[in-house]
Length: 388
Length: 131
Image (cartoon, rainbow over all chains, first blue to last red; front, side):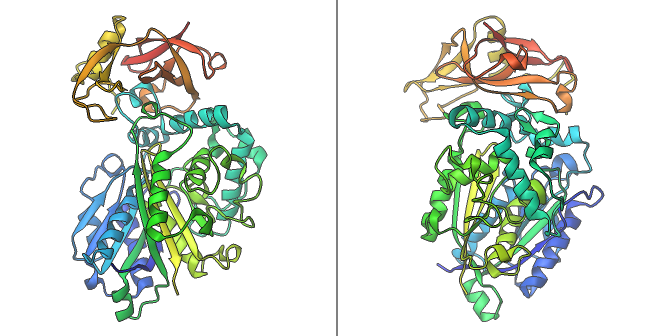
């Protein structure tokens, strides 16, 4: 089994680009990643592409081949869909194929175009990640589902809207210098608390924005990287995926995310690391409460104790364990199908030491990426390590 | 995407479940090992048992969690704001809208399930009434 190296990464700006097609967004990110990798595109053996709502936003299914041709790559291409974890699961497949010798050079990424839809339309499109019969037909929205997780969390473990507001403030602060981020502006706890309600107890500033964007990483086997003298000093050493019942009401506990816990345990075991070894993390904070559930599932905090981590300064830039130094989904943005691989692109730079926020984690050796689909009925976790 | 067409094809299992609930004869699916689930099921989602039977849904349940939705999908544009809740009936839980002021709904509130319709499209809607 070979080690999987990250040979190159590419990101578009995450933001409001309603007129740009997902194929063009993916082309920009992918060409950047191929150039960053310094590889011959003819060597690419497979393309793994994450996308969630192409059928709804662009009337376009079957986007895999479009992704490959956008990069001028002649290789089999497959589109992966697992809601907001789409490119995370695409990455997992690519990692396994490279490990198993099925491919020496792989392109994996995702793209999403969302702002060509109205707010009501994108709310509807996002809602299809829930159970249509038993949740969507009852009026459950994506924010509404996470709001119910937040209500249950507060009820079982305590915590306040103000605790959650500190997560939003932290992630906005992190995005300030990230040129790829949708929101490069600071917010205050007061602003977050005073923002309009979306689904109580979650308000507008608890929620990630609607984002257009793409991300790509180029993966190479260790032998390919050595043979071609690639600058690829970061490896993906662990992968894990967990699943759960689709509808929130079909789970025993709605205040935790067991699928992510399972994914994390598998990924840590795969990499031979423990939660305590992690120096930096990018987690799926589609809503502030989601960051809490993520950091607890990743084993950074005991269940019920993660809610005050940002407020206590543990997960902030200068804290012991910075979380979402990119700005996270909250401030960097959440182009749904692109999010999983964008986390890995950010972590690669953080571990290489050439990220705009690298100064906060100068000695980081181990990073973890947590990508979740729906209300965490799908979860995928990857462990990354600086190896050179 | 909004379901305004009154001739919409039925979803077997789900629509039968709503019919029964509307008639005051709500049920859930129970497997040989006592796990509850919602139809349609060919096997128990928890253990795979194919020995399934319909069991009567308890008349009341307790709110497990809730939210008031202010920003709806287009299909609920005229319904918002409304209260969604997950309600525990023992063997199964259901998601629906609570026909009450948000301030009156807390974790533990006892409610009774029923079927109503949405203000926006007239589609059938699983609701909970306070007891």
